[in-house]
Length: 101
Image 1 (cartoon, rainbow, N blue to C red):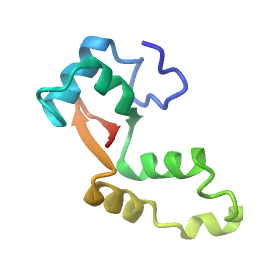
Image 2 (image 1 turned 120 degrees about the vertical axis):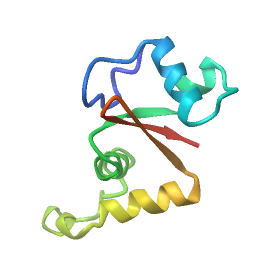
Image 3 (image 1 turned 90 degrees about the vertical axis):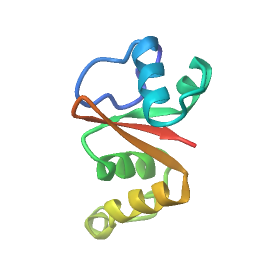
Image 4 (image 1 turned 60 degrees about the horizontal axis):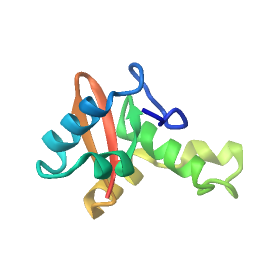
């Protein structure tokens, strides 16, 4: 699978079959592979790590100085994103998979 630019904590890239299986089990049981691929956002150790990655990769922290980043509440950002439906976190085999909505 060609997702090498995404974070893949806890192992290698998922196969298409594994990705679709996880997506159908935790997000949408009727989805097809193209939806699972398009929404896959990586594998992370926790929602906090996803939030940090998401904000850094989108330049959301561009104007925040390095010494102030310790004050950013990444856990809350991840909770809020999940509560709004912007992201779905799926714990599978001890690793958190993230899918955008």
